Amino acid sequence: MSEMTLVSMEMCQNGNTAYIGGYRQNHVNSIGGRSRCTCKGFYFHRNCKHLRAARELMCGYHEQLDGAPVKRGICPKCGGRTKTVLVGV
Ligand SMILES: [Zn+2]
Ligand SMILES: [Zn+2]
Image (cartoon, rainbow, N blue to C red; front, side, top):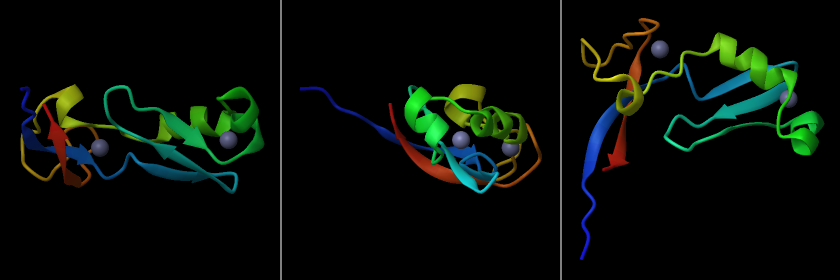
């Protein structure tokens, strides 16, 4: 019987959703997570200029990927606020 432990981790608030050119991009910050956009280009090609632009803009810090923050609640990458999420390990 395998057990999964839920631990609370922090991720940057500036890293989930962006609006570029009137389209919404969702960026899921987790291992194996992927980004998506609501435009037709993404629907057909699984990639678009909005996502590329959004990746430049967004921070994307996640404790599981980037290590624990120096100060709880503050993103070590962009200095913005973080939120706590539960991650199974
Ligand atoms: Zn797009
Ligand atoms: Zn950040």
